[in-house]
Amino acid sequence: MAPVLLLDAATFTNGWWNDMVEQPAFGRRLRELRTERGLSQAAVAGDNMSTGYLSRLESGARQPTARAVAYLAERLQVDASEFDAPSVGSVAEALALATSADDGGTLEKLAAALKQSPAVDPTLRWQALWLLSRAAAGRGERRQEAEYLDELVRTSEELMLPELQCRSRAQLARCLRSLGEIPGALRAGREACLLAHDHKLSVQDTGAALLTLVSVEAEAGRLSDARAHADDLLAVVAEQTGTLRAEALWSAATVSFRQGDPATARDLLEQALEEFDSRLDLVLWMRLRLAAASLYLQVRPRRLDECRRRLDEAEPVLGLVGTPVLRQEMLTLRVHLAFEERRYADARAAYDELVLDELRLTYRDRIRLDMLHNRLLIEEGHARQGVQRLRELAEQVQQTSNIDLAAEIWRALAEMPAVVDAAAGAETAAGAGTAAGVETAAGAAADRSDGSAGSGRSDGSGRSAPSARSDRSDRNDQNDRTEEASRDGRSS
Image (cartoon, rainbow, N blue to C red; front, top):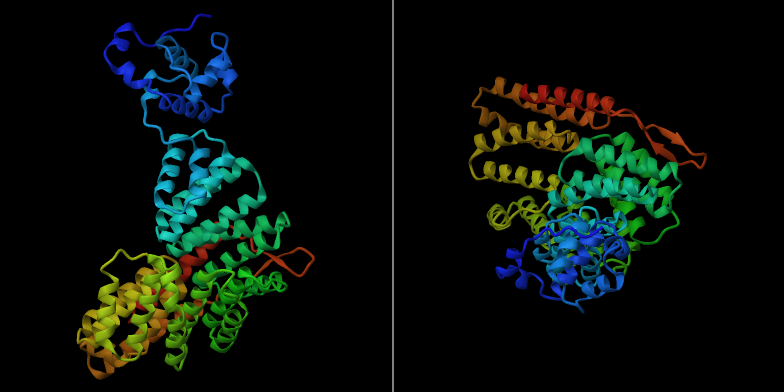
């Protein structure tokens, strides 16, 4: 069959044709259009063009004729003007460049190539999305990271590899947790753990899935489930010595602290600090010290000297591996430390410096920073405004199912009854009722933080898979806790 020309003669004599067919740009664009569609050179060449001629066109060794352009446009089912589209390189080329160079420009080209090639091979798409999602996480662009991870989960379904299905869901759960989107994080975390359990995946994949689920369950206030899965996690990594074990000890410490056992939390975290070698991962080495500093700021009595020591250990590393996210985490802890040391002017100055930039902190850290800002308002003589904002913040957090975090805010209010009374402008008796109401709200939220029983399926090895309760049941449980905590909070 003779080729059908898609361009008339006038098109080729108006100057556009000569500009369009500059080599090697034309050949690169031709190859992109072909590979995007998963076509071989033979399939595109068809009966009226030799594969050798097509190959020379793609390499830029031959200048195409008008008839050749029209024929190729027909074979690729595109308008001939597509050959004039700016070339961003194939996904494979962009991926090779991005993995061998640590700069934002190559990542931007990779994202552009991926967007322009929706039909790219799913294996290449997986690799590109994984790299782009990790880069977004490092920059603190968590909403962008979540978008990449959503697509990564869909790509893993095309590939049907349990390892990739598990990894994409574990990363999505971690990202959604950092955004404060707890119900979605719980679903993704449970799916990751079930995949690891059912397919008997490696220690690394199983541990990473459990690690994420534990952190999400702790954030959701499901401390019994978190404790059970933290114990499973520690058993899985018992023979490990690297990053996974250090993160497991850190995660177990978090659960212990939120269950009211700061001594065990401290022992677990100090064990991670002692065991972990900075040569394995300098960023994790620093983050463990930031975690320890945070713990010492929250225990009773405060251990401010130890907090400062851990921050001072981590500070020099910022110059080597510091990212905007890590710098903000460090400064946030400095703000909290200044507040606890009653250096309110220093705390305010550091806070103002921090919020000048776009905050890249996790949802939990942003809420705790907002909480500290309101406590600073109280210390600066704006008690009514500070107390009101703390109450609003607690109710807002409850609505996102972050029950444990909401309980922390209510407890802070319960610990300052005189301020609450003064802010309410009530008489002594009425004020006592107000303070008691805040204490009731804090107690209700704290009680609900440990209101779910751990359950799972045993695989015969002493390890259990996470509960597979329906999402509807989860939503009902969360709604019940939120409604009760919110009702108690309003009574204050």
